[in-house]
Image 1: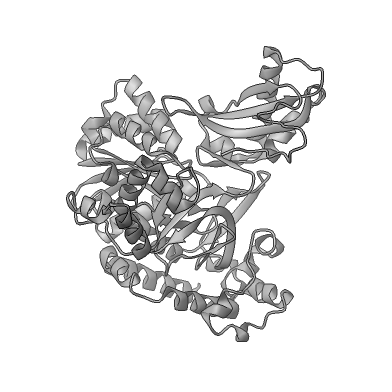
Image 2: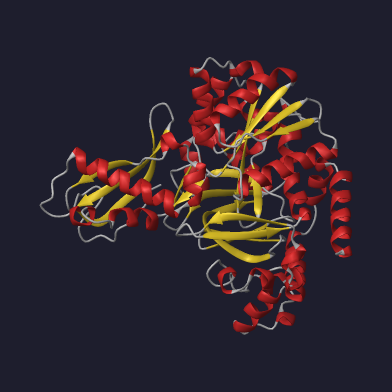
Length: 501
């Protein structure tokens, strides 16, 4: 028996149950996040064998790290230079894998599973993100709520993590009941139609394109979503405000700032930040004022915008990409996840908007006093390396390459392609692969079909997330064949990029 485990679990549970999230966040907004990050560093150095070895290899004496300025000079950790070079046990506290009670799985850059151990206390701090959403956005402290988990279930990180966190809220006293149909639309329809009338509201939790597809398919089957006071919790995708408006209309939403919430999360460390009514209000203003958005973010595309608890996940920016530090089953210090984005303090954000004549706090207070905390913002454009996110699955060029390297097909193509997720006028998404044909090879419908079938086969074989997250009707990629040197996709003499945002 591990007596220490019991004490950790008991202390963590008591702290979670006894601390109202509004009190927690008000206190966190006042605390010194930089000092907390430095404290985390020294804790990890003292207890994690892999990090001790990492610093030794880098020639760093941990006792020399005394100030936050010292902390900011520490080398970045990544999957390649840190996680994959050490055993799971060495990455955990005191070198003990058994200090964790659950292992979740995500797919790596070639579909090879990556394992993420965690303990129940890691879930409590993530459950606070869900509590923010359920309390401040959905008023689930006073509304009997059915939480329907629509993420893929099994070993994959999203579904089990989400179900656990929602159950922790129920243990805290929220009148929330959880059901787990996973990404099975038929089962989702059944449980909603049979159970929803007994609840004040229904929260669907899943990947944005899957939830939209579920709502659209439900309408086609005669489901009147507006009767059930539907709310959505989403993760894994950047979506437009036009998408939010369209889906809101179809599910009967009257308040987009309070009926939706998107999570910014990773398999590496759970939920890093979450949309709040305030962040949604701001993002919708920016969507309607692209010049203002470009001035704020430096790009013409609109990123995901969330707020975060800097004592739970401490963010930094390095060359336009995000780093974070946080305590988990595998504690991470200055971890680089290759997400392009940035951070903006609460005061900077509000002052920027006021300079443009917009006061989001006043806008929100006309609807509710909830969901307004002086927490910092993080914005995320997505992975800076070559991947696309589709129904919450990371799709990698390496997976597509294998499909093009098969007999016969390899004689038709140069090996170059462009992978992207496209959206039609009805905001439905599909996976597009534009393929460059070899010289003198002509495009035919038969070639398109053969290439699509080959890519699909190997995507499902190599990428477990793709096979389990993406509904079967949306798995087959749409293939476009272009001549060699097509100026739009394959210009001659230009370094090729295999993905487009």
